[in-house]
Figure (cartoon, rainbow, N blue to C red):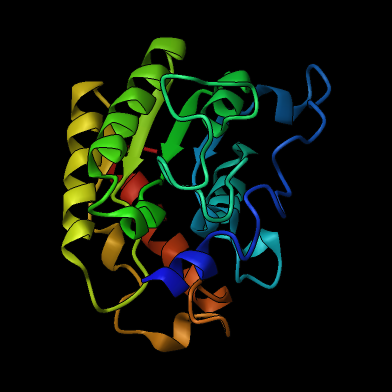
Length: 224
C-alpha cells in the first residue's frame, strides 16, 4: 500500500487547494449571516479533489441546496493520524479540528478515516486514541453544535480489514458523544469505476454527484 499512501497523501501536500476554509465573514443582517454555519472535518473526499470545480463537491452541493454557510478546511491526505503533527491531545490553531471549532458552527460533519487505513495495523492504537480525542474535543468545545459522523469513505471494491475496524472506532466515538451517524458511506461509489477521476483515487464530477445524492437522502433522514 505504500504507493497509495503517497498518492492519497503527500502527492497533494497536506494544506493544498482549500477553497472555502477562510472566506470573509458575511455582512451582519445578510441572509448568509443568519444561515446555519456548517463545518466539515474531512480529507480529499470532502475537499472535492477530482472534481472539475469546487462547486461540484458534495459538501458545497448540499450546503447550496439548504442555504447553509459552508466552512470547509478539509485537507488532502489527512487522517486522524496521517499527515497530522502534532497528534491529539495537542490542538494547535492550524489543526483542522481547531479550525472547525474556530468557525463556531451550528453543525459539524465529520468524514474522516479513509487515509488512516494506510497506517494500519502499525498505528492502530494511535488512530483509535485520536478518534476518541477528536470527538471529545469537538463535543466539549462545541456543546451546542449538532455533530454528524459519516461512515468513513472508501474508494476501491477491495476492502482491507482495516476499513471495518476504523468504521467501528468512529461509530463508537460518535455514539459516546451523542453524534448522529450516517452509515454505508464507505460503499457509496464502489463498483463504479466510471465515477472516478483520471487519477483513479478520487471521485469525478459524476462520482461527487452520486455522493451528493446519497448525502442529501441521509441528511433528510436526520431531519436536515
